[in-house]
Image (cartoon, rainbow over all chains, first blue to last red; front, side, top):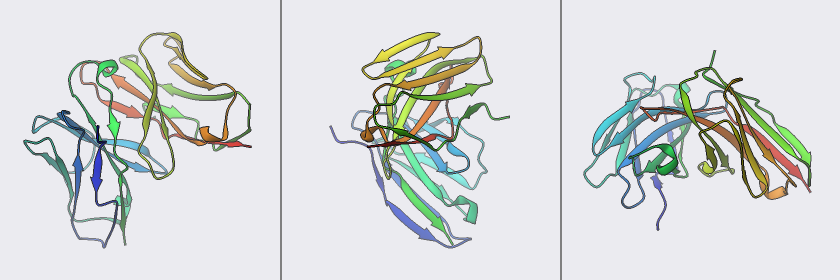
Length: 116
Length: 111
């Protein structure tokens, strides 16, 4: 079974630009969650999509948005980039149903975003 | 105060040592407790999960939860250099199943 894939793996942008990251979940998984990982804050939850609908949302500004397509692939967009947005962005896929014990999240390798 | 606090480390131990990794949490509504391992340049992978107070063993790994103290631990016995990684605790709220992660403890096991 192919794992979670994320593209691109590395990205360099300048302040003020926008960026779109992509995540392809494991075949059959309907939930995709996005996280931001930084050394100081650790892994912080951005949002979760399930069957094309945003089901959960973290405490990030509206510059961070996402969407999910009918094939469960998901994209995350960050507009008006700031220096503080430099981070590793991880997505995780799961079946999206049931308690976590039956609904393990599988993480992709992440996209390393650097904002200059 | 963060909802989940984790000792940041880094932690360096000799091969064969017993390692103790710890997290505390503030919300008694948290129901599921997990430990993830993250190697450099990789995404986290689930090591263990539990939802009740007490111990759960899996090979060299033991997860311990004390709900009365809001404290969780991961013990690694007979640690190996291949255990060198960042270990993250994760706590999940019931109902919304939202994951809240600790900041991670970087572990280095010296050969």
